[in-house]
Length: 141
Image (cartoon, rainbow, N blue to C red; front, side):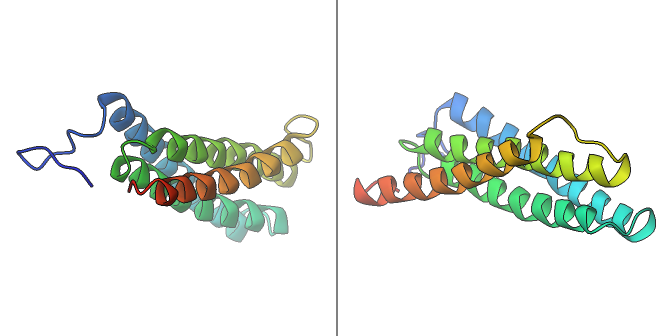
């Protein structure tokens, strides 16, 4: 990781830093929602949909947080890592939102919300892998 003369991350653009912190904040919200859904699954509804939604939000929140960190550690490829984090977060909120809504309300969030969210999750994992391979291939970490 390149550091400026005073030890800060001056090689990382201010925009990348801001977007990484925004992604980290959204990952924190996703993690908190995951814990809330786990509690709801234990105390409100024993639906396996809530358990799945909680697990997915927690796992993908950690992955998005890691991708935000990689964006800061890889200044020239930071945008790719942030794109992957955005896909994971958006996909997680859509997929888990639809599962939660079905478990608690008995209706879908909107038609195809879960499949769209799941597809975004898959694309997010692929984008993270592509970003990592691109950073390795180019010798830039």
